[in-house]
Length: 345
Image (cartoon, rainbow, N blue to C red; front, top):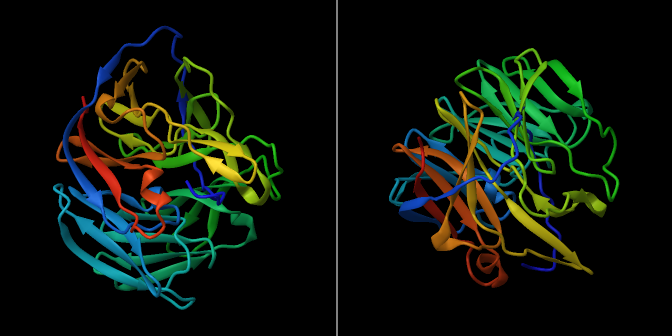
């Protein structure tokens, strides 16, 4: 990894308590692989996903971004450009990009706004955020509403996409700028399409998924007993982080909720950041029993860098791995690995 400290934006998820016992690990069979060519460097792991059996991700160049759609084999199907700039339909930052119900939702922290595009890249609308929104870290869209989690100000918020009005919110425990040494609360946020509940996966210990009702009432928790020593994810100056980032992505199916065991591991040494290796593993919480199952990618573990769950692709789980070797050579384009895993039950 380079000597730069990377600013990471995080989200949140619900929790269910599990008995602490030794869990059996199963091998996560890799069905196929693909690549993300010249991927965007800015929050790249939050600008990729799966939509209707296609993989999407953001590329970046000097004067524009591009949203690319791939086949399950990794072949480019189509793309559209988003110019760099401040005007309508332009962007200066990629906090998160998601494709939901035939629309592209692009959150830009530099411009403090959400921009909505069609699947062909046509500009549709935008919503400007205010100070009350905070630094948005994760979001999802359902039933005409934008649900979001921020790094400060608002822990969970609900915005009407038609009017831009903030309808409901839960205050964040951090109201100002996070102080160095503070633990990072929250993590990834997703709406469970099978229940309508809000899931928040924590990036810091303990390993938890919070479950909130659409009325913003906390109703449940899912937990996994960490079997080894982990370092708390804490803030450094300028909202950088160090430690073990746990749940950085979340995928739901009718029978289970899937999350990574670790998203990335950071270790600060002086003015540089190292990314120690860790096993690539997926934890599946069964909906009925709430019991976790652990799947290990033995053929590519241990690994460094980001490990992110993209979505369900042709009945399998698509994931991406962005290793530190991909970015150590600044002359080489950013190319990330993708895997299709046969672990959905």
